[in-house]
Image (tube, rainbow over the protein chains, first blue to last red):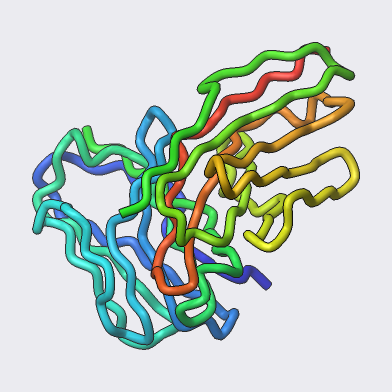
Length: 114
Length: 112
């Protein structure tokens, strides 16, 4: 069983389109995250939810909107996609408030905007 | 907020040699320091971690050291093998925080 699963794994789309990435974890964790990894491999946090409540909302264009229907799911919707949105997006989860126990990452979604 | 710096950004070693990656952090309240390994096209995975009440931790060929006074910690890989080739990330966090602060990554290449 995959602990943190993301879909789709690859996403190729044209500029201006709207797309969503889904994430689900079966670890019973309370906290979930979205990270963006650019071509230089830097891991940049975008959002975090703790038990469906938004707790981190970094400086991200408002074209990006996270949604957490329950604590096991965190989805990312992106409107009006731009070339610069091309990156790998990782979902991660951790036990409640316990960032001292490590993240479990999903396998990533490679988004390519053409 | 916390600032984690990582060096070097790239590192090449001959198979069998040792590799050392160093990180510094700025927030003295940080008390947990994990290291992640990311192979090409894969997810980052936790390989070892250290807490602030410990100065050194070892797991087979991998060790991590922590100097709280100087606010730096290091990853040591001995007897490197080609499968150690990957990007390594250090990170720092604290009990009262709600995220990890990652370093910028080190791309390690082990030359057979």
